[in-house]
Length: 290
Image 1 (cartoon, rainbow, N blue to C red):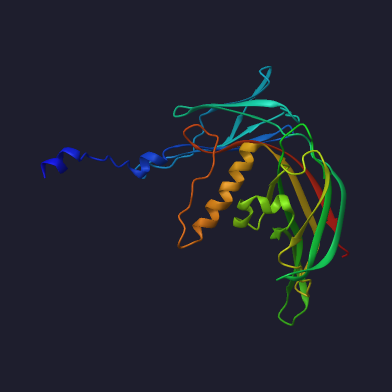
Image 2 (image 1 turned 45 degrees about the vertical axis):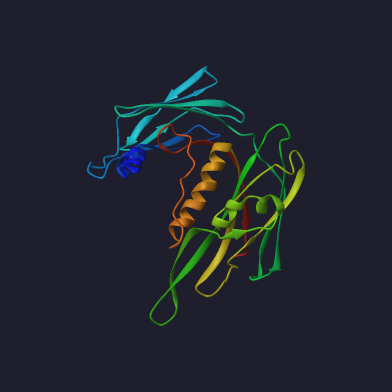
């Protein structure tokens, strides 16, 4: 017993609310003039949750130009009339009564689609569905990380009591997509989401490549609804943003599982949560006959 006592020690178990406390930032810098910043805090369960409206937020490019954000509403800030261009390095600074942080990143190179095509193809386990083919030239001097997503514009009809069409609504819906291209498959995090496809240029760096992805839920144009158009978005994102989206997909998937514990979401916020990242993007709009 004396020997056991001499080897034992007290283990201090940290409180969950103490571990969670910290700033939450969401700001994806786009190649444009306006940049939205969402700022909040994780607080202990015993404290009230209040969105902050006192914060000095600035964005600086290459140590020469800077702009300050204006407060739109509690927790929401906007940096106006401050263009950030491809390959610009920038520094994001936030000072508030509770938080001080600096995050640095760089805007990726521009991405441009050089060829696009659509077709209908039989996919195992799905049947006939829409397939989208696109080609773009990857920058050979950069390590690039891409995010692919698509949404469809739907017209839904409203019927009267006698079955006649009396009105309609038009809205956008995120599509469920997948693809078997090698860069898609090499990123295991794509197994956790059907909302987007994330991939890097590790195996095709600098090469003009063609990629395909398909619709997991084939369009069912009926008397009740009709697909009007599809918007495909290809983004070139910074590495920090790539890690954030990958880990977020796994985290959200784990939350739906009764056997998996949600893992942490990758962040570049010091002692906090969220992301200050960067993206350039290009869109491809497919309009269907009406």
